Length: 277
Image (cartoon, helix red, strand yellow):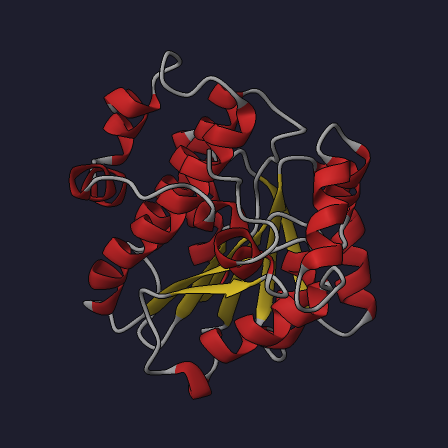
């Protein structure tokens, strides 16, 4: 049987990761839009990878279940790279929660049923999850453990509580890391591992949208003040993912890796820290 790597989200970060973990394996590349999947598949195919494409909407259970079925028809699912999502400048709060929070939980649940022994996965979260103030113990447990179909009914995720896209995004990305920690227990029973990576500002088309959007000035200030003094690249995220998904990361599961050039450190303890009244 072939070993299959599933990439969900055909963007720059997902492609960079896939290039590092898919040599000699079959890549199933899924995106919401077929044209995006086809464009990424051409790049990977030209680099020597065997690629099959699919469309998938992670906010729809039937679509995710169909993707799992297609993946298992190709071989043993040995890796999952979940890089699909929408940003605060691209969608309203309810859409962000549906795609980034519910969709991630759904992908983890369904691929957790078929991941092969020795397999691994990474979920792309965000530095934004690290800038959300602490949640209560009960809220953490709810984001981590609530059944997928009940997740969006949690009281603190309702529209009267989550009134802007950035707050929704922060909750979703914090939820991703918590969900992965819980799912690592279930994946571990199959002999597989799962982790999150929380990138900062990585130069991709999505990041360029953010830099040109209403929060662009704030993002540029983050970069100027951070220890690194620059944005990151997809390849730098790919380097971390290669560790987490490869044999050198065999002791790592249920963890979240922040890769943001020091922006979060500056936010909590440096010049980006919110002013106290």
